Image 1 (cartoon, rainbow, N blue to C red):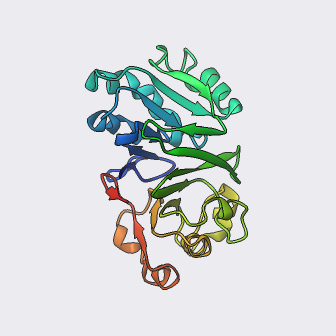
Image 2 (cartoon, helix red, strand yellow):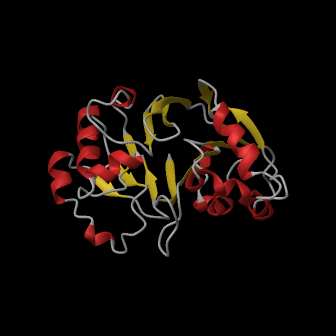
Length: 247
């Protein structure tokens, strides 16, 4: 199984990273549709795509408007469906896809996020609430022989309710917008500091941790020192755009 990181920053893109977008090509699945969504076309392996949105802040949904070009580059695509909570779908319809914002409805279906979803490869996707301004959800996918969790846009804490939802996953993709120098800002904006994220991974007994949704103002990844983080959770690594993760 291969997971592609197509966008690994948050808030706004920079010269090295696009905003939130992950893809499981073999499963026909995309998690979040930030600016990295335009890269989906080059990796399509299925005739349909299911796009699951954690929430609809622009850095997680604006890529839906890129679907005209995605379809042009991947003409084999038939149905493309985006799933989100009802209030988030309402915001997409009334704002992102309002005629004055985007005059041509993208070729996709919008559906309410189901409690459980079976992927094209048989994987079982579930979701759980996260604390974030406006609300967000995390996702967990279980196959018979492996598991994956995606947690973005929340303030990590070892006592957070979502920790039990990700317990024992083989691969944890978790946001880490701040290093450890802005805990007050992290709390205010609903984002996470590095030390809290690795503490969550350790408590959840995850197999591997990959950090995404990093601060776009960080212009050199070398400034994100993972030495202390790896003392708490040794299998910690920084996600980058274009990274392919085998798990």
